[in-house]
Length: 244
Image (cartoon, rainbow, N blue to C red; front, side, top):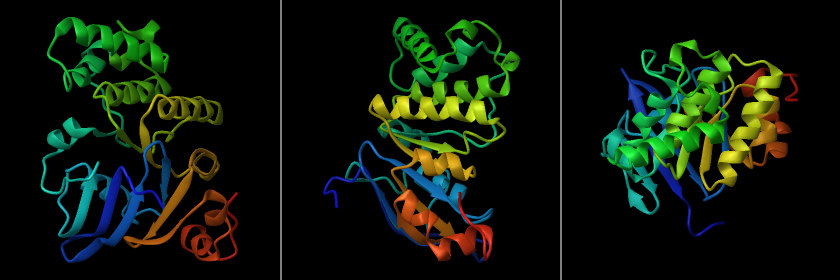
């Protein structure tokens, strides 16, 4: 067990109108890891992301990042520390160019216009959107908008990147291309925490997978062990199903 977890979540809980959305969840992420998060619809996955990134405040427990307590911080303060997320529904600034959308994220780390422009061009090259740099964001295809969402997040220079269903709506070829890009992001030094419904994708992408049901962790193991766990299979897909 690593002595230097990048993210430590300990016994956090969150309720909405008396209903427990997250209940005493504990997990950790190590530097350089890709941690998958799966569970049925309504299990609390996005709520957990919202708690980590400061969009919601836990009622109890602790969240530490790089050894520092981040509970109680606002989302923009947490972003400054190095945690960035994407969202299920991609909403770029439609009236701005692709380049300008990335520049918005770049201002998280610098106010120098020349640095912002140079960094934004580099990131667009990294995600494969450089040819679309000057096009309006609303003209991008869905795969292009997914790449733009990743580019905007990368522009904030995250140590930990939370990806919320980045493959949603993509065909198998497009999923493969984004998977390769996620690996490339990890290779560049960014740790990744990812929610994904496509089982083949998450099993092939993750070093380790956490499974939650009804807001509680029911498994935390290797993809192979999770895929063979009878409790996970029943909770996620129903009795008699197989995770493939």
